[in-house]
Amino acid sequence: MDNRILVTGGAGFIGSHTVVELIEAGFEPIIIDNFSNSYPFIISNLEKITGKKIKYYEVDCNDQPALEKVFEKEENINGVIHFAAFKAVGESVEQPLKYYRNNVASVITLLEVMAKYNVENLVFSSSCTVYGEPDELPVMEDSLVKLANSPYGNTKQVCEEILKDYVSSNALLKAIALRYFNPIGAHPSSLIGELPIGKPNNLIPFITQTAIGIRSELTVFGDNYETPDGSCIRDYIHVVDLAKAHVKAIIYANKQETRSFYDIFNVGTGQGNSVFEIIKAFNEASGTTLNYKIGPKRDGDVTQVYGDVSKSLKLLEWKTEKSLLDSLRDAWNWQKHLEKQNYGI
Ligand code: WQD
Image (cartoon, rainbow, N blue to C red; front, side):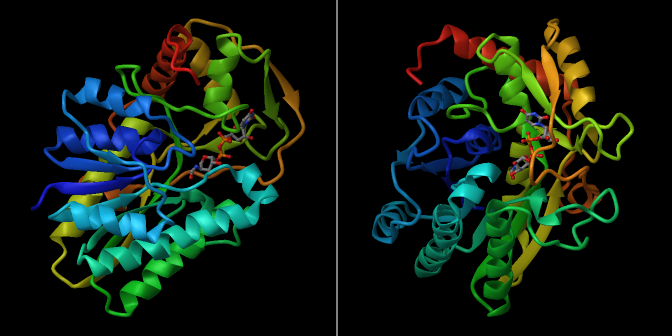
């Protein structure tokens, strides 16, 4: 198998961790990133972690001529892992066209360029948000895809439909959609991790920024949900485990004999944890006591979602290896590392 893989959004949170795991598995990743939601220093930190020179292109996936130039220049590309997308649920409600333009149009552009250069393997970054508020738990890949509760979630649903329809048209494409649950944590080296710009939307970066004193306190968005302790339940997966799933997925896509192939996999731990359980586990992992208060529910939050991951175990030969405490400890170490560095962010 040719080992050269294009990673769009490869300087981002999940993309950068996947670049590390691709190199560890003997691949040669080439990063495409427009740095709209990431930083060039991540590339040099990736080179420190892996000891390898990493080629990258500052390109927007919606810029078809620029994207074609990359495919023109880089020969023997075996496949693409497509992370490049906006992902803030709240922002997508305020700026839906920005999300449809960037998240959906970029997939169409990428598919057209892949076809032009006969690149046939694709791993697509999808999301558990496609399940909405599930009727049954854990959600399976064939669970009902509900009306998305945000334009962001809808962009993921639309992109999955685009892949399915395109493959059904007998296109030269073997595509895998990975439905992520809640990616958290950071690389154990503390050289790469989650880098929210401005006030974090997501729970874990808000917790670590509160614990280090950047934020005064965490607001728990609601403690009267229909759950054992009243707070929402999610499936929190270590970003390194999630990255490894992408390596397994591109290998699995490449293995398919048929010209046109599409499949979907849940990528999570298979376990649910509540917000209060996360706070308790973070206190244990960090040796700190988190300052928090209870606030109103957040629009768009589902009560609970976590996934059945037996299909990924069986077909991708992948399962999580890291614990919730590993994730929270790595997230906390990354926050402390950021404090000491002057990355100029
Ligand atoms: C988790 C829980 C909040 C912040 C996100 C992305 C989604 C997908 C999965 C990529 C919820 C609570 C949060 C805070 C809180 N990622 N919370 N106080 O919303 O499950 O989904 O990850 O595909 O796109 O949006 O993650 O971390 O925002 O929230 O109480 O300050 O933490 O109510 O119950 P979410 P989250």
